[in-house]
Structures are given as structure tokens and as C-alpha cells.
Length: 502
Image: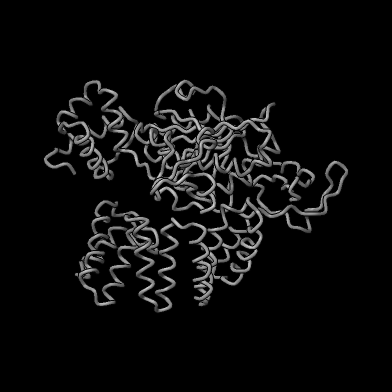
């Protein structure tokens, strides 16, 4: 918290920030607000009292931009949540292709709250990968954000390693040009996305976006959490008006419960919940006759995700237009991966391995599996590790690294495999590589500190633990840490302090 500021003044500051930006900071988030305001003061070369007076009057656009720049989190990366992108490919886009909502072959996608642009560019890359089925379609991709600094970076299209921690290596090589430690997106992908500054609390979305048609898909992931209940519902109403009938609203995993407007129908996919504008579909849509495309692959008929049951191979044969379909559609790789994940979660590791090997083997000659291929290798490594086959676990983990060389989480997984095998030296090397790729990886710092302590290297161990503590101080105490098996940041900080290593 900013020192010597009375509570009532901070309450008023929080209210003023909400009034001018729409960003909501309840008392439990005042620490985050305080840190952001300290940065704003430095940026504007002012003090908290002058800023307070400025907000009470009519703040300039410079002040508002400074607030939005420092108080929004631009934490994103290419293909964040691959499960969503697989659903977008297999279900949403193919659903639009098979059941067009317009007279013209046109699809419009809007990334609302796109930060530095990785999300809309990921969509553009996915569309480019789907060229065989979208070659005659007019695709529009829009990215918007309240943060002008983030948008400036998005428009330049230049990124560091950190933006590629979930991106397959072949995608980086195909769509980016590397110069030193920077990667510039190729012009033909850059030209597919248009960017605009937009505050979702504003009233005139079409004018701000310079676009007046309704959208087929709106992505508003990890944005609604910034608003209070009233403002959130107002934003959702405006997003609904911007969607075509039967269009899709995609929110973050923790935000689906916010969408309670009657015009939206929740649609459950494996491990995900999104919303479609329109009433629930009571009757399963007609299944199209299966045809082969030019590559000789069977095109999959679209069945609503909320149909409630899968169509088994035996039951699939049915009368359609007086023709009998006897061959079931090829199961989407996303569904196969989810089944393998379900097997893993219930401890059926051998069943998981069998399904995952099938995905990986089919993916060798199939571009449409690029999203889940690395995820399948990672899950294979975990499954083999749980079976006790550490050699195979290591092999598949290293294959995953070959596929995504900039993903720090895979190096962390490899370190745990080495550790289970009693190979502490290689475990330490993998942890250092993970930290190199993500210097803010708290569990990697902590685990490295533990291993260095085990190797009787107290000075190095203390350094790692101090790094972990410094990062924990910047993290909400109640936040669950990735790869911590459910431990909160506060709990880990207490653990480190009690160990008296740091």
C-alpha cells in the first residue's frame, strides 16, 4: 500500500479509477492498485495527491492512458489455452462453415482485450492453417484493447521468447522471422488483423472499431474480471448486441459464471464452457453426408456440443436424405486428447498412453493436429512417469521440448523426471533452463533451491529461495501457484521462511 494514505482517500481513489477507466479494485485488490498507482506517479512525474486532484477534476487522456497501461495485465502468449483453439477449429469454425449464418461466405472474429496481440495473431495463424477449407471465405479479425502501449506493440508484431512458451517450433519457423532475441510476425499474418483502442465501458463499439457488422465470434478472455457486477452486465449486453444470432462469446475459464444474460445459452465442451447467442437447441442438427476433401480426409459432420451424448460408431448409421451413412466421422483430435486426459485424471495411465500414442502417430502427416501434438507428448511423459517407466517419460518429454523449445514448463517437467530417477545434476540443469526462459517461474526457483541445498550448496540455495520469496511478495497470497499441487503463494512463502534457508 502507498504509505500515509488514509483509508477513505484510498477508497475514493479506487472509485475514481473505476469512473475513468472502468477497472474495478475492491479492497482485497488494493495492494495491486497501490503498486500500479506508484508506477503511474513515476510515469507522470507527479505525486499521489496531485494525481488524486487530477482524477477529481477532468483528467487528460495522458493520465487515463497511464492508468490503463499500469493497471491492466498484459500477460498473454501465442496459443494460450490450446484446448480453446482446438475447439475453435474443430467445432466453432467448422460449424460456421457447415451452417453459414450469412448469405456471403464471411467470418468475423473479435479479440476484445487483446493486450499485445498474441491472441488475434494466433487466430490468424489458425485460419491460415485451415486454408483448404477456408480458401473461398472472407475472414475479418479485429483486436482491441484499452491499453495504448500494449496496442502499439501489437501493431508492430515484434515479440520476445516469452510470448512463445506454448507455441510449436514449426509454427514459429513458419510465421516469424527471428532477429537476435526478437521474433517478427510475417507480413501476410500481420495484414490479417486490424487493431483499435477501445474501452469496453464505452457506448459506441462499432464507431471505435470502425466496423459495423455483427461478429461471429467474440473472445473476451480474462477481461470481465476487471469489472464490478453492474459494469460487467452492461459490457455483456453490448457484446451481445455485437454478436450475430448463434454467434459465440468466449470468456476465460473463471469467467463463464459471469455470463447470466437470457440471450446466451451455455454450451459445454470437454473441459470448457462457452456461450452461444440464441435459445437452446432442442433437436440435434441434421448430420451432413460425409465427403472427402482434396487431401482424401473425411470432413466431419457438425453435431452440437451440448447434444448430451456421443454418437457411437454402431448407432451412427442413419437415414439422411434417403441415403444411408455407414461410416462414422473421424474423431477430432481434441476429443481424443480429452478422453486421454480423463483416463489420466482417474489414474488409468496405460489407457491414456494408448490414446495419446494414437494421436501422436496420426499427427505426423496431419497439420490439423499441431495444436494438441505437444500437449499429447507432455501428457505421455506424465503418464509414463506415473507408470514408473522413466525412460519413456524422458523420451517423450524431450520430444515435447523439440516441438516447443521455448516452453519453460516442459523443462520443469523434465527436471521432475530426472529428480525421480535420482539424477539431480540433470534436474538442476533443466530447472536453470526453465528459469532462463521464465525468470518469474516461482516453483522452478523453489525447487532449484531445494536441490541445491540437497547438493550441499548453501549459498546458491539461499539465492534461489530469495528469488522465490521476492516473486511471492508480488503475488496475491491466495493465488494457487502453477505446478505446486494446489499450494498458495502465501503458504509457500511461509514454508520457505520456516526452512531458514533463505
